[in-house]
Length: 224
Image (cartoon, rainbow, N blue to C red; front, side):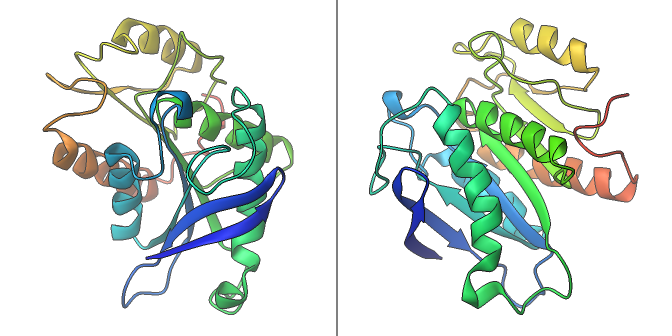
């Protein structure tokens, strides 16, 4: 695990980067944390669990602190600047000297996020797709539908929600998911922060990502 500062669009950007042991990495997974104004940081347990799931599947996991959090400079920007930071990291991290020779070709990109971080991940995925560089994987947990404008995603996305989420009601996620026709995996009894359900969450993220791989599903931004 490495914690470092990068020169981002709004100043220093604090990131934690973790590399899988003893295997050639398949690419980079960028994980967004919950709302900064309500205590969200890169050390959030759900964001950490997402990073661990990707790490176990051979991805280099990258968790930034959003603007104004920890050692990251700047101020909260309602998801706009945070999305810019995600896009910056997608370009900048693979170019770091220690990763330049670890991939025979362009590394794969995965995006993930929890709560507010799900909004940032979905918006970054939408923009990357517009640029002709869609991510190879997209995982959204506790998706903040109803509270934020979350872009549509395709059937290749992994969407997981808690049955008893008191912050983002499950019905709001179903309404959003219905527009995208993307399945929602529901963890019975789980609240917004997946208290006592983190092990189940990690296993479901891994299983669904592996299933998407094995089934050669379309890009997570492709339509039905």
